[in-house]
Image 1 (spheres, rainbow, N blue to C red):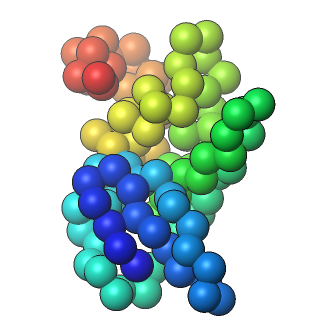
Image 2: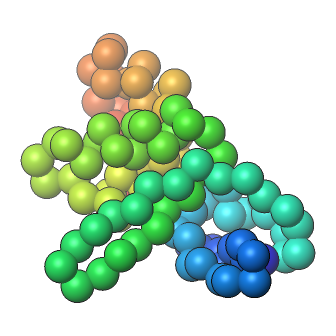
Length: 104
């Protein structure tokens, strides 16, 4: 696996897949290290983009955030880069504007 700040190339059976990752995950992985990810494939007319997460809950909140008008994969990935799924659910449930405004 090769990695930079926002994505990693994950090798599966000799085939490399570019996977976009939350910053808090990509900063912890090491090149050559085996990793397990929960993935989401964003299908657009002009692109297939793969996103990876270290937990099913983070993947689910990433998917859920995209159902909000004006939030696409990049904004949802920013949210999951800063907070884990539990923190996002808590901020939404308590309407914690301070925490939500920290998301780029």
